[in-house]
Length: 487
Image (cartoon, rainbow, N blue to C red):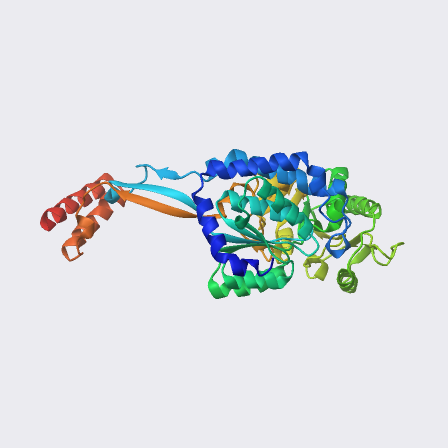
C-alpha cells in the first residue's frame, strides 16, 4: 500500500526494465487477455464501483457500464490494434538529411519513461485512471496507482484482472488513497506523474515535482463553454445541454457551465433561454457536498448582485433538501464568478454577445480551457473552433465524442497540460530516443575549426541555402577552394 513502493522500489524498477525489454507483442497480449476478461465480467467489474461516490454522487451499475466499462474496453481494443504502429521505431531516410551528414543513418525509438505515478479521480474511477494505466503499461512502464478515496475496490479489481492475465505484480502497485501517498511516492522517485483532479491539487503536486524536475501530465478542472450560433437547431441544443448537465450527476469536468448566444436576435435569445429553462426544470435533483452548496450559493448571490437574472435557483427552489436542482443564470457577464468557477453542480450561465470578437474576449476571461461545444452551421462552427484556446472542440454535440479511444484529451490554461488517451496519449508515456550510426569516414568534422574553415562553412551555407543559381554556384566554388586549402 502507501509505503510499499518505498520498500520495494528496487524490485519495481528492475521489473520495469525487464518489462520494457519484453517484445511489444507480448505486452499487447496481456492487454488483449484483459479485454476479454473484462468483457465477460463487465457487470461484476462495474459493481466494484460504489453506488455512492465522492461528493454524494449516486451511480447505478448501468451508469458505470455505459460511462466507464464500455469506453475502457474500447481503449483496450484501440491499443491492441494501434500500439504497434504508434510505438514503431521510425527510420529516417535520405530525404531532408543535411549533406554534411551523408553516411549517417538515424532511427527514433520510443523508450518507456520508467515508473509512472497515476493519480486517479473520484468521478470516473475506472475509466480515467484505467486508460492511463494500460497506456503506461503497454508503453513499457511500471505504474503506481493512487485511487481516489472510496474507489480502491474498483482499482484493486482491475489490478487483480491484470495479474490474472499474466502481468508481473511488481509492474502495478496500488497506493493508499490519502494525499500523503502521492507526496511519499514523488519523494521516493518517480519518472512521470499523471494527475486527474482540480487545478488546486495540480498546483500542489507541481510544487513538489519542481524540486526534482519531474515531468507531469495534468488533466485538471473545467468551466466549459457552449457557443450557440445563428441557425442552431434549438431542440437538439437543449437536449444536448440537458444531457451534459445531467450526465454523471454533473460531476464531469467538461460539463457545460457557460453558454454564449452569439449574434442572436432578441426573439432567438428568448427562445433559447426558454428552452434551457424548460430543460433545466426537468432535471432530477442531485446531492451536493456542503462546500459545493456553499460555493453555488455564493455564485448565485454574486451574479444577482451584478445584475444577472436568476431564472432558476437550484438551492432555493428545491423540494428535496437532500438534492439541488439545476441553476440557470441569464444575462451573465464575464466578470461574474459563475463564469470563471470550476464546480461540480448543475449550474449554467447564459451570456448574450453581439459578434465573435466580443464572444472570444468574454470566453478568454475564464482561466479554464478544457473543451468547448459549438452549435450551429458546420462551416461557421469550424471557423470559430479554429480560434478557441481549448483542448477539444465538439460541433453540434457535447461530452460523448471525447470517449473515442483514438482521441487525445487534455486542456490548456488552468485546465492543465499534456494529453492522455489516443495515439498522443500513448506517446506521452514514452520519450524519444535517437540512435544514429555513421557509415561514412569523412574526416572534416573532427578537425579543429580555424580561419581556413570560414570559407568552407560560408561556401557551404551559400551553396545549400542561398537563392538563385548564381549564388549557389558561387557558394560551390568557395567551398571547393576552401576544401583544397584545408587538404
